[in-house]
Amino acid sequence: MADTWRYYAPTVSWTANKNLLDIWNGASSSKTISVYRMFVFNLATTVTGVLDFAYIYRFTDSSAPATTGSAITGYAHRSNNTALNANTLGGTGYTANITKTAANMLRRFLFASNEAVAGTLNYSGLETLVPFAMVWDSGYSDASTQPLTCVAGAATGYVVVAGAGHSAGTTDLEIEFTSA
Image 1 (cartoon, rainbow, N blue to C red):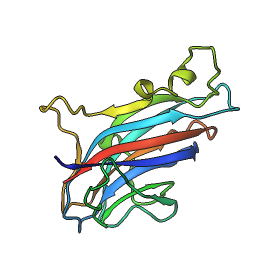
Image 2 (tube, rainbow, N blue to C red):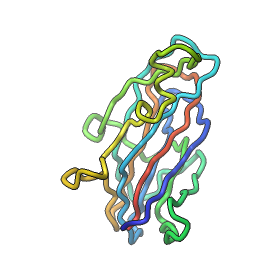
Image 3 (cartoon, one colour):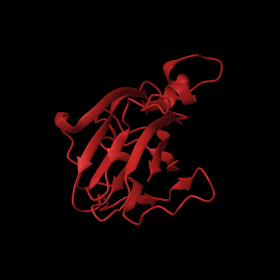
């Protein structure tokens, strides 16, 4: 079984066009990265009336995507996982090297960064729950469905991007992946 990892970015501010969370496997990596799940959880506490699109893109580049932003350390699902390859990176807020076109867009989804209010079952409240926060699921049980893959030796990555409609609220994001 391949080692399973998670990049977790807590309390990320929702800013228009921001690269909220990405995973990138550099050309020098000897490992193949398979992305199985992505989550976007609503954490907004004082925002009302905000609905926007978000996007998942695939990108390729010969250099790491980071020019600004924050690197994220991978969390191993098992304590004895082999360390991640130094060329496998995760981060939030990176600004360069990601071309955002319809040709490399994998998914567009609605996201409401409104405050989730206890006792109401609305869209914003549902986004705080795991089944509704999952924005990508390749499914472990269906062997005929390929996960999003960053093959060894090819500079490839995936990123969740905020839409252009607003800059309000906060979110937790996760990318669950294997390294083999």
